[in-house]
Length: 220
Figure 1 (cartoon, rainbow, N blue to C red):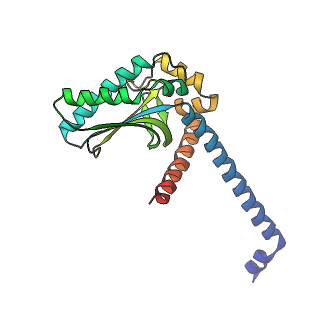
Figure 2: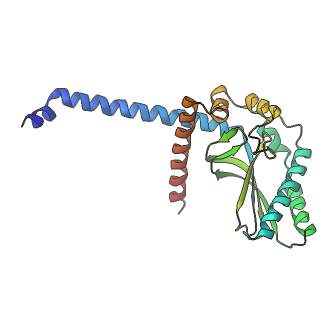
Figure 3: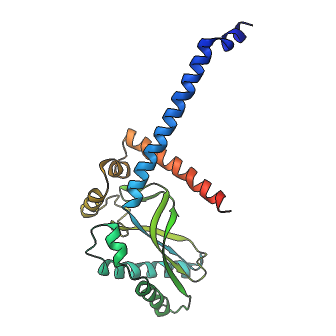
């Protein structure tokens, strides 16, 4: 009876209402924060996605050879790009496809190659001491043959594709490009691993993974 009276009391109702409103306020602010930071990162990063024909050792090795050829061509033809938009405008998809296709032929295979620009789902990836949260990013996708093998992801702008992961360090030149294109919060989230920033990164990762799951369910 005593507990029932407490539950029915105005004070308890007011406390419950305030707690619910506070919870909603925190959730809304967290979602707004994640949306803003994710958009800042996604809008200023351009990625490369290469998909092998299969998971055989030969096809996986070919994937890396094609990757290197595509990167060499794109890096040489877009070296003057100072932002993602400039790089995308400089891309010649037909020329890139021809480079990738010729590379496949030169290595003794006859798989067809397709190349496309799109807005694709990416998992969380770490490049040296820079980590990009999962989410959707503009990217160049290269599909070799059946494209049923393991994927290879990297960041084409700023250039992080050849970062030495074993050393755990991204070149200062690449970090400078990142800083020039991201706001302070966005850069801190992907480059620092301190307590508060690490929590923010995990929050972004959690909500972005939830968004990916919803998108996947909606497309089924």
